[in-house]
Length: 330
Ligand SMILES: [Zn+2]
Image (cartoon, rainbow, N blue to C red; front, side):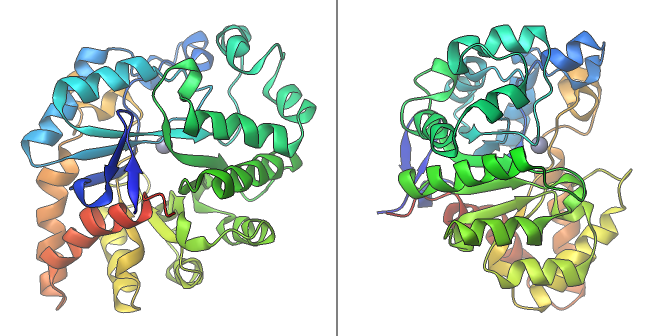
């Protein structure tokens, strides 16, 4: 029986419904707060909730919150938004690309991971299996000491490189996946190093059909995408609306290329909205409603004009594929 693990508990995967696969909802990263980067703080639960309600008004049902430990995540607030809006939220266990660390982060994490001065000190001090145990507890007991459990396990690597400590977290996440059967999510920096991550995951015997790779659209390279998709992995296009990286036409062209090559069952879509200025109710941004309300109709129009069935593809990208990707397979 396949299920998806939301913050409230496990649900049959066919109850997931219309899903954004990589978002951020309430987080106050102490590292950015210290530097005065106010735009990066999603620090008002009520404002975040209004954007989640907009998403719901347009038919949205589930959001995957891809925030991992150390990024000032407010698990309690995210859970409260799920309860108050009825939008299902999936939480994330595991690691970010590398920790943005300062004295406050150290104090916040002390009850969870122990007394370490830096991220590197923590990861270096632990064995791979000890780190895997940390991830397993986040999936089976709860995130950051709460009773709300992670529904996927995450690791990440840097731009065009994988450090030994990043490799260690990748292996820990792979082992936590084997133990818990939780789906795996990868952060790729600017979409790079996906194939190198895949080699490492294979050395840990991970079946790539359980893995989604984030930020693939940051590297708008159809040949690369094909090599990734050939492995059976999911490709997450989570930069919708970020025209600063590429116009929408580029992402839609890349998506239709993947469909043309037969990979329509491995595509996920989201907006990775991690700034106040991306949210409508914080700072006049396009908001969480943008993809479902505006992008989807445009995609359907372009897909139909290119000879595809746009409605069918939207159903796959936002409903069927997330249901399969985020299911625990036992
Ligand atoms: Zn993200």
